[in-house]
Image (cartoon, rainbow, N blue to C red):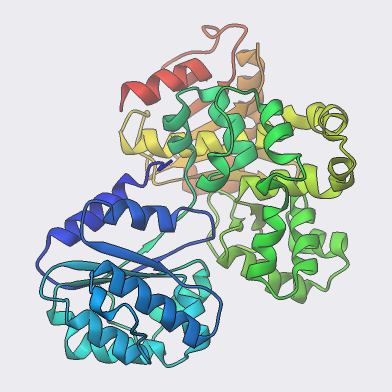
Length: 465
């Protein structure tokens, strides 16, 4: 199943229609769909994706020789093995009279066996390939290694690429587009995250707890162990990362609290947090209105599957191994699941607000939108521009009384306005209250107060498609 990626796919196709040679870097975390994107791109054109393996250089060259010769249908060469990378690119040159896509997938495996490969590609790109019809793609799952090998100024390939695509997990709006049911989309996003390989494991016909039981809490399920696999392949000291991510999943957000929870030195925690940011597994949030250098930043998990796995699976893996998945669902997951969804729903709403903002269907076009907190006060989302402020409260609950929420939001917004001081003077204030459903709406709706339930959001989202 190929999900979304229409922008990236159309961009690649437009490049292919051009007359120039292309040198494209495609990279991103494991399981985000890089290989599927390349396969979809080349399915109707002349192209080949060669998936590198972790093996010796001789075996890699044997594999690549066989696949290239078969692709170009040179049956008279079927016993030939190119002796080195220069021979490989010389052979490609002999077939470069017409447009052809050559994709080397898991490029870091190839460089691991031959550190000179970037220099060899540089030579062939500079001497003939840039003036040819070759469409070269280098792809890899290690974000840091791909950036260092292909884009860093110390790399021989620096300045040669003609384009790069950092493939990220899906946003919430993509999942909503996929399943066309906002409540189901929130549940799927909160549990399976935006990683396509995880998302397609979930069944749209099953309830969320059935999906959790059958697709995750199963010893023979890929998802049961994949989080461990991804971490162990990306980091050198997984036990420390496991401890840090578990602390984050339990609500520890500051450097000091994570350090206290894990027993690790703050300097050590800081170093590992930066690696997790590079892997796009966590992000650092800054309170609305603060500069990016603010010391008030907090760390949160940005990958929802990791968040769910470390919250509900990792601490209770013995339940699964003993065949007690249903007991785990009933005793640990169900009692706190609504609260878990509540925080994830805020992220869903933030994504929707950015989408609505781009389509100019909010009271004003904001320049920034994020959470705000100060001591014990927290506002779910605040959108701002030079003239206006939007305060937003989000509830994953039914039959919410909007009047009560509105009064609380007014009180909290006054704290924010006092804290910001002169920067807010004269700005027009708006309030947005969002919940699954309301006991009533009309009691607080006015020109500057919006009240949306999930049916309203769904209608707005799909009516603007």
